[in-house]
Image (cartoon, rainbow over all chains, first blue to last red; front, side, top):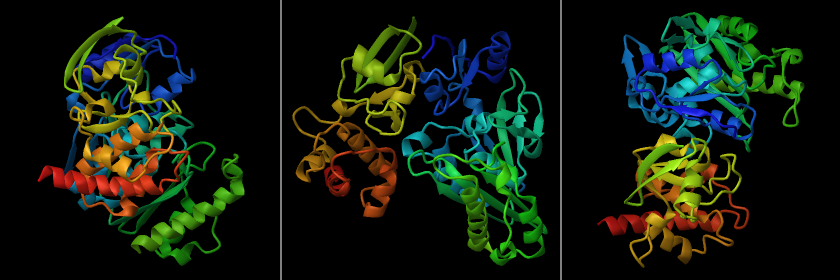
Length: 265
Length: 159
């Protein structure tokens, strides 16, 4: 790990000021991605701004059919929250599939969303549920937030404070995991609200999480697994690596999407 | 150097450390508590699992400074004098280890699992919960048996 200066602010405004003062600094939430990256010297922030003492950034609220999860809320908390399970069970299930128990005891929703790893789970839920990402500066629609591999709409010094998920009528997340890393080789989140269906795919896209709009149209016409017969996402925009080539990922996307629909149709 | 202090196995400790110090380095190199192991150093194997404020976490992927003020329990903190913790005893009785390298992490994970999910654990639950702990000797069978037995023993000990 390269050297860094360590800061532990007590409030979001203090953290934002520190981030503004240290352009090459990084925010530390649960650290389950950032610390391994720093240990491999793939990241070398000049300053580390540890958010762990900002208690205002923890908690879950369900109000008027919207689940708002503050940024530092850990995966274990979301996975076991009775409120989340009641309002959006698929979201609690997704949180319970991230990493392993020790990782879920540390990792946070804000850290996952801000990092936008192309194989992370939460971005698919944000996109499929039409979430709103709230920062210390503004509210950003999920459709405008995820910009590509590890790229988001966040500006320098901008800190996610919470993420709000409107509860859908039906939703399900199906993940085909790499058994070693536990990241998604393909993860598909399907959400239906009224006549609208959104399908978001993680783990597969060469530019990160994306919506499968052809699937959405087919499922809006007929919300059943058979609606996706013969449909597939073009392999040309998908990742190929030693774990799965693009054609296999394309195949898995259809399979996982059908399973997600079958689980709730 | 930055000051850090925490409770480790019931003892108050404080030190001046490089901010880069991982919790596992702090435990092993500063406190000489070498029961916590470093296997993969990439948060996959779970040999370094300790409890921080009751949560099982991977100490190779946690900064010591983040644990300032926390209560930390390591494998050294489980036994009461010469009397093994029921989970430790269950690993011995069930031959839940061969080389023993992964054992501290397995036991710390198992104890937290019981604290979180209770003492009646079925085999499927135990196997699922061991997802973040790798053993390269035993094939897990006796580890799973040991955890089931240890959980039952923890229930009896609590009565």
